[in-house]
Length: 450
Image (tube, rainbow, N blue to C red; front, side, top):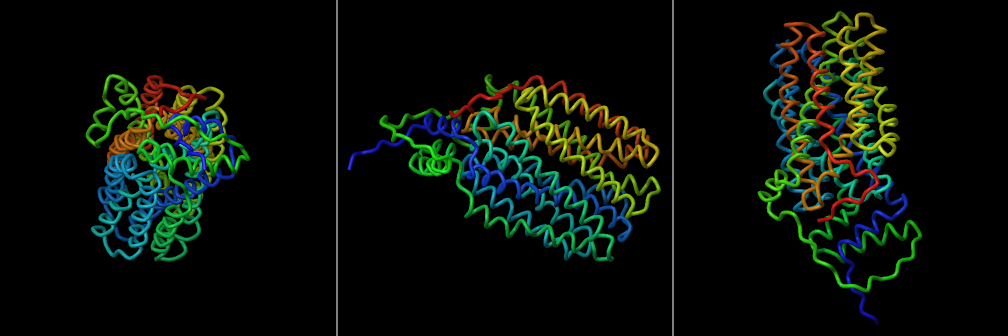
């Protein structure tokens, strides 16, 4: 039997980029996307649950603010640790682990009897959720062919709209149905714990990561299954494996490398974009049901408005998914951020029910389109050895803002009302719009596989 040499890391990467979209890609996309949707369902549910618990438990604004924010404390830590672990242990392993952690913590939240235990469990929910999101986007980007990579990541992010819509439906139909409706909502949020098993055993590991760890035979097996699905006939490689120097090896070196001369500017800009978008998005959308309640609408009516506003997320993602391969990453991201800023100002000044719905839908459309573009561009900024770390720490920087924003919203509402709060959100969107132009744009280009 003739001896077949192992492929090089470069050949693994080039073969992945040259593939057409196959059933295997669809499986990776939908498998990761379902996890993403379940994440969104959990984050969305807490905005409805806060509105109910504020009445049932007679909570103060400070207590409701901490229920919203404590999860983001966990998310900040989880995003930073998750990226480091995914670069060391693998994308699939960490993805499954994070689903398990936050699914179990969400299910346990259905049994709480007071604020203290709810805060503890919400922290663990955030820990799992924060680690999962940047790992999932890194995972899918490493499978995606170069020509459609940005579009696939926006489609992945569009699963967020499906999950958020599911949370709005649960908020509208389940939570108001009984005094324990919010407990049933938490119980439904435990689904990710079971889905973690599907991820662990049903999805392949990233061949780029496998190759970066020297597991070239494993990487070859994964790539071959994708080539078989595409009905490609490949000639076995005849050259020996080529060692490619990783940018960094240890966790400390990887974090330090994010601020090396090569990556310093893009790290600064992407952290700033993540910070501003998180502040404005979570400050607005976590509090919209409660803001509508304070404006005089009853619980069912405010949840109905929120459901209608949420539905505008899907067309926002669809337009962003198309534009990101036409305009590129930076232009698409900046246009949707600017649209978010204008929509925030209009929502803050809306008075009638019709104006609230229309301007809220515009905010939802532009803001979630911006999220899709942001998740597409972030993993592309760094080489394979830094990709999950870079994505995770950018998300972690953003989660700091998502901790602060829900705590500040009650203060802003008490000081200047809805107009002040949403004017501040618009300012953050504008800063993010400017920072987006400091990012590199890799539309149609191969990922850096160092």
